Length: 246
Image 1 (spheres, helix red, strand yellow):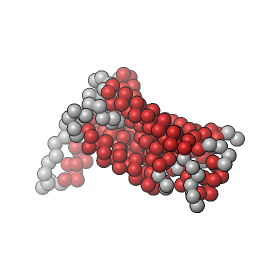
Image 2 (image 1 turned 90 degrees about the horizontal axis):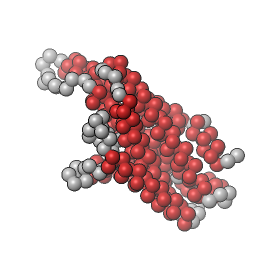
Image 3 (image 1 turned 90 degrees about the vertical axis):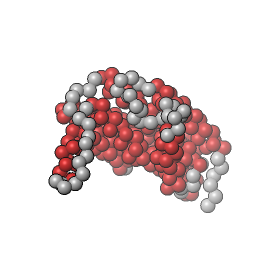
Image 4 (image 1 turned 30 degrees about the vertical axis):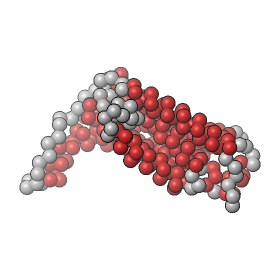
């Protein structure tokens, strides 16, 4: 049985694929609902004596970026965690010896990265379709060009996150440490870089400003370029990495 088929079976026979599909689909269905009925929900929760919160009228420009923002946060964490767990071949000594005495670490990592990254993008695509459907039903139809731009931005960001997860899995000695590294990078460091005015147009994000009018190409290009560099770095380190000591 090939390594590719083993990884595919590992994806579909464990909760990994189900977790991705559930999280992204839920986010896609929930965000347009909140955008549409958010003012009413806040009004009911606030009561008659509380401060009133004014929200802009519901629109496509709010609904789809809301999904992209959540997909780039919670969805990204789920995708990165699954990828780290899949690529952390050396996390357990016995399994590491078993795998690496039968094929190289690089040969083990490539199918794990590709299968899990593809699953993350596929789940994101399903969630985007759910978000577009809910938006069309509750607010207004979504144009195909805007939908394509949303997909390109989100898929590029998730690809970058999975590439970062590969590097973290190769360099870390445990799944938890690798996941913490990825989470800290994409939830803390990357947003901090986005606060710098000179860097803001280039910082990768799942929901760049003005996405529905035109594709901000700079964050997408930076995300894909960094993803390629991270994959190359991770595989180079893996090629030279010795077997872990017991």
